Amino acid sequence: MRTDLLNRLATHTQQREQAGLRRRLHTVARADGMWVQRDGRRLLSFCSNDYLGLAQHPALVDALKRAADSDGVGSGSAHLICGHRAAHAALEEALAEWTGRERALLFSTGYMANLGVMQALLQRDDVCVQDKLNHACLIDGAQLAGAELKRYPHADVEGAARQLAARPGAASLLATDGVFSMDGDIAPLRELSTLCRREQATLMVDDAHGLGVLGPQGEGSVADAGLGQGDVPVLMATLGKALGCSGAFVAGSAALIDGLVQSARTYIYTTAMPPALAAATLAAVRLAQAENWRREKLHALIARFRSGAGQLGLPLMPSPTAIQPLLLGDARAALEASEALEQAGFLVTAIRPPTVPQGKARLRITLSAAHEESDVDRLLEAFSRLPSGAASARPV
Ligand SMILES: *Cc1c(COP(=O)(O)O)cnc(C)c1O
Image 1 (cartoon, rainbow, N blue to C red):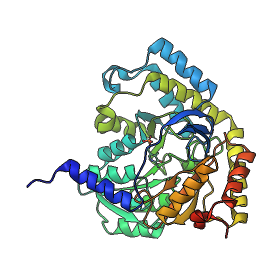
Image 2: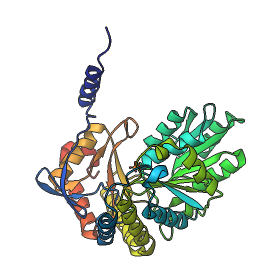
Image 3: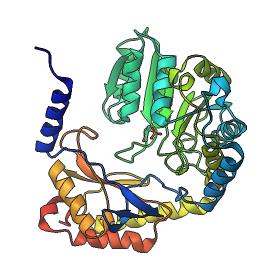
Image 4: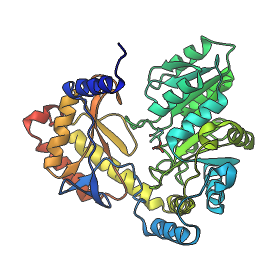
């Protein structure tokens, strides 16, 4: 008898439930800065990726409305048919200039950008070397491209070198998150770029969590490490995090971008993002570049959180960025701590396997320039009062 696919899926769901790993969808009825209304309650969110507090900025809203008034909503087609509008072109130009690249190419999401780049660059028999903690879509991209995926221990440059050395003749892409999405630490980008030069491998950095946050003008983790297009030929970042919009881009040489236009299937065979969204994102780029106070405020809040959490004995991880996870280990403990915080009026999601490795469940706390010092203090205060069920997040 054939396996029934829907039954099998339902069994998987039950198994996740039993293991304390069931994922649940909650509807946010209203968002007002870092405040969200959920299940009839107002919660102060510490889990959004809106690091610079731009998602509701009036300049973005205004740009979106104006563009929608003149251009409507949908782009009508893929970029290569007739969906590529002036707003897309202007945004691509601004992103290329900001990141110090010859050109940039928009994708509808970061997930699609990574799938598209890898599928365009890699062939069967090529090697894709990746940090074990890379974002899921980088892993998926290499697998979908049919390349041999070789992972190295987190941030271990020697490990990466060994993986490259194992296939000395193979065309190789080394891909890493710039800022790791669940840990918040920064990849050893200078060392990886030296390694890639030596081994003639191509380096790709996914800077979803670095763009806007790191670098003197928010250029991201790569510029912050003093590296340019020659060192990191393939730079990808998203528009849905610090820029407060949605979408992604790949930046690099004109030849890279031309090649992606020819070959990246997730670019070619999909509808271009709404032009009004590109217009709003351009407004976000301008603010992210110009308003250094947002980065300064964010970094002050990060320091305040780390110092307070350290004093409370909370299980901080070594992160200098807006992502400040507390490593609880056990999935149920993470869930209980998250629920206890919700009772206290805070929204902090528990991140459990397989998003993070077994035994490494955590509360992924994120900070934003839209938070105030008093918000951080109140969160820390709530931690100091967590009930016994959330034992491992309680001060020791
Ligand atoms: C969020 C994220 C992505 C995916 O970007 P989307 O635009 O949300 O699809 C890719 N890479 C990293 C490291 C991310 O954190």
